[in-house]
Amino acid sequence: MDWLEALQHLRSARLPGVLATVSEVRGHAPREAGAKMVVGTKSTWGSIGGGNLEATVVDQARDMMAKGISLPHSAEFALNEHATTEHGRQCCGGKVRVLLEPFLSLPVVAIFGVGHVGYELGRILSRLPMTLYLVDSRGEQLDPARLGDMASGVADVRAVHTPVPDSFLGDLPPGAHVFIMSHDHSEDFLLCHAALRRVDLGSIGLIGSRAKWLRFRQKLAAEGFAEPEIDRIQCPIGLPDVRGKAPAVIAVSAAAALLGSLPSAQQ
Image: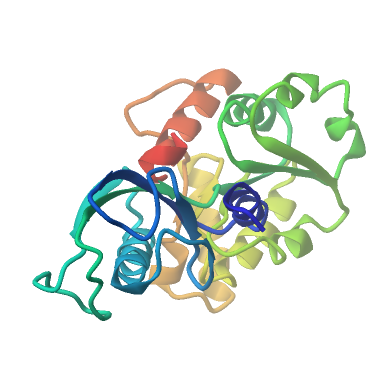
């Protein structure tokens, strides 16, 4: 697998990676400028020269992924017996500069309920690089003709028709962001219940008034959820300073709040 295939593999698996490229060589070095290597959290593909140089780059790349760093970083390495190293010495005699470019995993967002607000939110998010699930228990809401606007965006849009949306929620990957906005308050409550059983979700948003949320809080507490667990759900959704009940206004506000929580590379 070459470096380009490796990046595509990581992207399809929703895994982060760092592309390391030898950008400059002065003197003798094990690889020429342009040599590339892809670093994943557990594997690497390609080589930029082996030895301390490569091992140190792998360490730096994985540290970037662990910290969620999204901006490229350039590092210089001296390949001589006087250089401080952690993984053995390389005595080629030259200097190498390596550019590390992070490729964070694409976010996953699931909209449960593709009514007026869900539709507008889907239109906005479909313009961003992400995997976007549109989930509804009503098949007509997911008609391809109705969702045509979303197919032209850059997101990987996946329509899911299921009579038990709360079951599908349990199958979402860790870190997924969830918007709960179905046509039925009972369905919303089941989705909230299923979301709180997942401790690994990125965020949970519930559409509704403060009165609706007060009733839901009481019911969730009666189901045995503690206050800190219930507080994971944001209701109302969106930015507090953006007011208005029009579907497009709510959708813009919800999308803006979501973007504030995503790494800058995904915005």
